[in-house]
Length: 360
Image (cartoon, rainbow, N blue to C red; front, side, top):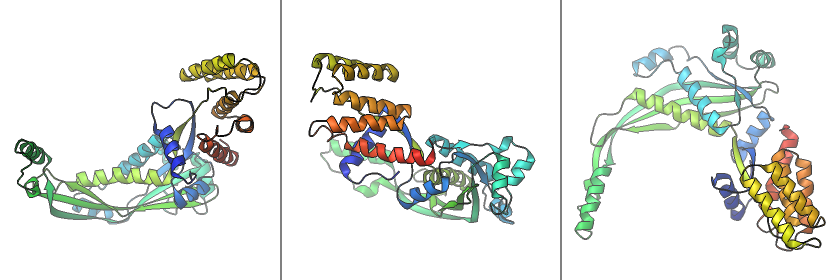
């Protein structure tokens, strides 16, 4: 999801999304990759979440060559499992497991003709909305090198000795030892296709995976281990580029009684505080009832109660009601009251627009 420019907004949003101890009312929404990649992914998906992951058969001759190189020729299961696992951690897609389907379904999904004339029929038959096709575009490239690698245990001992000798060391070179390093590049292309519209987006991996041996061991590490690790990393990279991530944002709550034009400020404050206590326990329905009492007690003038009710209705999925309360709060707020909440309003507007387009 594209974020409002400005370091203050970005820092505040990141803190509220990532902070495990954050207080407030939680709302979840998909965050797309940044820049053009995220914008294109959003257009391709068009709100669709049900996906199948298909690793293509290797081109003719690849299996023999991979075996000769000491790499696993049965790459499909590892690749598909890696992608699915990485996508599940991002929480966006509903993944359809093709392994449980009949041979007919698997043949459809693996059809080398791709998603062209029969894309909609294939999607309906598989009961999916998008298919992620993954294929190896070239044979893996393996390089074995010897590099100077820091021996951390030796470095720690040297630093301890330096501290005892008032900072005198034998130099950084003493920490390093020639070590075998395997560089393995697996050339993979992943293409996500919306089976209804035919729109697609791709991501390609050409980055080498680096695996070093134990410090001082001149032999290069196992190519098979490097291959498995490379596929795991590629799965993570594919998910990062072709899957939104569902994030949790905590809407900050208000408890001040500034600007009241009716009611008993102490009673209004008590209802606001009681609502926040219920929210901290996760009982948001009861919290909303307390904020409604605060609003009634204030004669409909409590900005904090309006704001908190806006947060509650955002959480409940009633975006129109949430907007109504947020706008009322902004209209009644004292000057400066919104200074630390403007980013929330901006995020809400973007999320409301997204929900209107994507339907969830």
